[in-house]
Image (cartoon, rainbow, N blue to C red; front, side, top):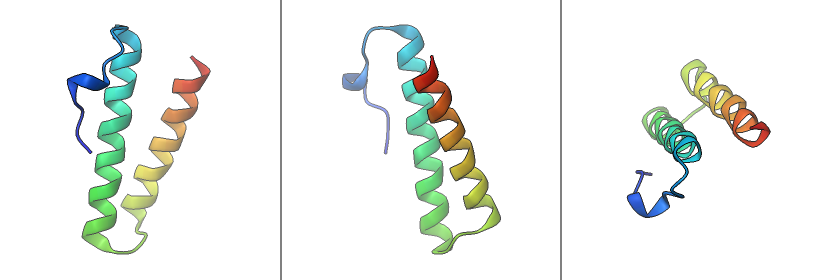
Length: 59
């Protein structure tokens, strides 16, 4: 998944968070495709994504 300008809300703080979420989801997708199984790196990437989603919705 790649960030597209059409996803922008016009609110800088939210757009930055959304861009980071898209990037993290892309990293996770690539890790899963590359390994075809759950690895330590994939697990760590998933954990970071989940943690950041919590921050995003808390703010």
